[in-house]
Image 1 (spheres, one colour):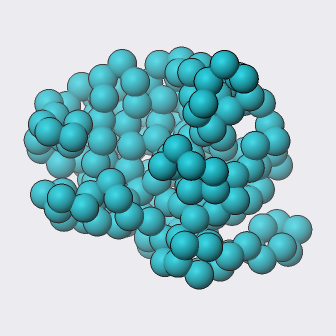
Image 2 (cartoon, rainbow, N blue to C red):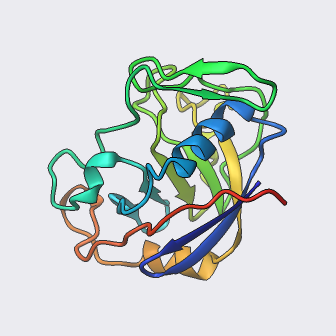
Length: 184
């Protein structure tokens, strides 16, 4: 699946790894198709690390709750094989089956650090963050990679360099205009 994502800084295009992580990718695709991500801002940007978006509270970039929200608890979506997944508490099950590293340009599921706590927030790595790889037994992090930027890395790197304030929030908001899901 291709994912064109125009932002207020330019366009980013990614490909989802649906064949490898169908639960995580289907969750993201379902939220995108319903307009969940439209108008959200990058609420956490750390140069030399990553750029994060996907919190519904970030539509108001000044909200103190930006970075704390997710999808509607109990909402459902379907994977390509027809399995219905329920977002228990707004969260999806961890899909820790493909050992894909958090390399530059990869999309990874954000979470609270607890098992099965990912929902709608994702981050895009701007450096190789191997310490976030779930399959490295020396690290406590569990962040599955489910996509990769295929065009617009220059835009991502521009977003990474925006000035930030407390909580790593961009001083001038960077908005995700919309996310489209298209088949290749």
